[in-house]
Amino acid sequence: MRRTTAIITSAAVFGALSLAGCGSESTPAFCDSLAAAQLSAQHVRETNVAENGLSQLRTNLNQLRADVQQLVTDAKGQWSEQADEVKGNLDILKASIEAARATPSDTNIGAIRSALNTLMASVTALGDAMRDTC
Image (cartoon, rainbow, N blue to C red; front, side):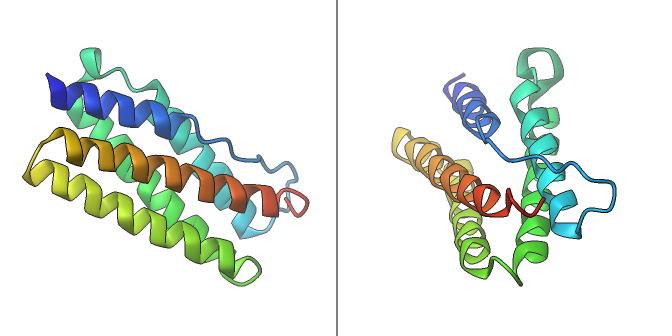
């Protein structure tokens, strides 16, 4: 039960990602990637673990990871510094999740929360930098 609570908490933190949306029909690829990451974050936030189980949450987190990775790829040229920071923080989150799966403990669950908060801050910073372009 503790593990489920930690995953729900992690999902709530991911759901708090505040990304700028993109609004034009002929937007650059990085704007579309930003919008996709925003939508994936919303899906993670709205996942009902009690109703749909952990498999749906895992699916939504995997999609979010893929969308954030695409965002990093697309933003690399113009916002490489912020994109590199997001990529590094995504790698840290992945390692934290793997460590918690291997050895569920309060320390490892806390590391996930910390990594999620750091990732959230870096994605928000990237979104803020992109806001005027999208």
